[in-house]
Image 1 (tube, rainbow, N blue to C red):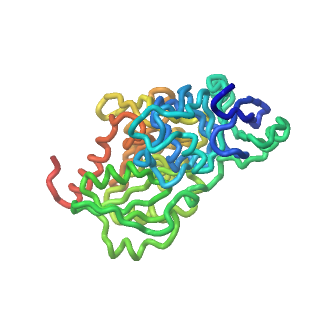
Image 2 (tube, rainbow, N blue to C red):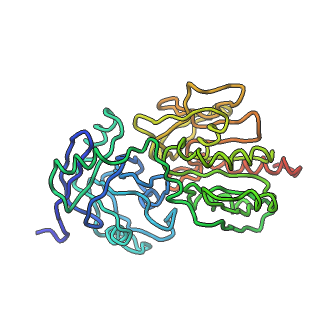
Image 3 (cartoon, helix red, strand yellow):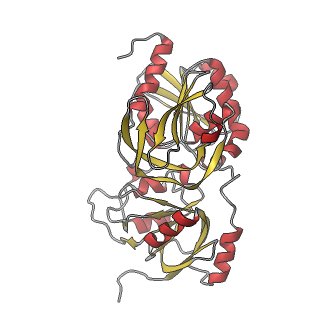
Length: 373
C-alpha cells in the first residue's frame, strides 16, 4: 500500500484527448491553455512567473518536487499557474535548505494538479496539434464533461490578463545608485527588479493600468522599462500603449522584455501573432546578430512579433531564435529603445544574456553624459 494519497484525477484536452493519473495539490477542477516547460530545475520560479497566469503548466522533466520549495525562490507573491501536470511527483524532498515540500506549497496556494501522466506523450501531441485548452479535475471524473469544459474554456488569443497580476499602486525599489527607472508592471518578475536595483537603479514601479503622467513628469526618470506579462499583447496594448508613447516622447532610453518587447513593436505599428506552440524553457538557442554569437536563453511566450510585418525603417532585428527563426530582439530607430522576447534575468536558466541589463544602463549613462566603461 502506498504511503502517499493516490486519489484519481483526469486531464482532458479540448480535442478529446484524455489521460488519467492521480491528484496532487488541492482537490478540485481547473483549466486553461496547456503548455509545457523544458527546464530541468527551477519549477518554483516557473510556477510563480506572472507570465504563466491562466495556463496549465506541464513539466517535461519527469521528477518534480525532489528539492522542495524555498520562499526566496518565488518570483511573485503567489503561484500564477492555473494547474500543474507532472510525470513523477515527489511527495518528500531531500534538501536541507528547503522550507517545505511541494505538496504543501501547492495546497497552500490552492493549485490543482495531476501526476502519473505520460507527459512525453502529451508534449508530442501538443507539438503536432498546437497548443489547446485543457481541464484537470480530481472531483469530476466524467471524461465527456471534462472535454466539454475544455472546449468551453476561454482561449488565450484576445485575452487581457496583465491587470490580473499587476500591483495595485505604484511602489519604489531603492538602491544607492543615481539612476531612476520607471518600470511598468504587466507581471514583472522579482529577478528583473533585482537585476536593475543591483546595477544602481532606483525603480518606481507602476501598475499596468492607471494615471501616471503627472507623477512621471515630476519624478523625471532617466529611463523606462516595460515588463513581461501574460495574455494577448494586442489586448494589453489597448491601454498600455499610452505609457509606451509617453516614454518615447521623453527621448529617454527604453528597455522591454517579453510582453514589453511586443508592446514596443506594436507602438511602431508592427503586429504580433499567436504561436503554434510557443517557447517555454531554459535551453533555447538565440543568435546575437551583432556579435555573431549564440546565447542559451530562458523563454516563456506564446505570442511573437510578426516577421512579415517588419519595417526596416523602424526597427532592426538584433536577435533571432535558432530553432524557428522567430524574432527575439529589436533595436528601434525612431527612439532610443531596445527589446528582447526572451528573459535575460533567467530564474531559472543560464545567465548568457544578463549583459542586456548592463547595456540598458550604458544607454542611460550616455543620455546623461556620464562615462561608459
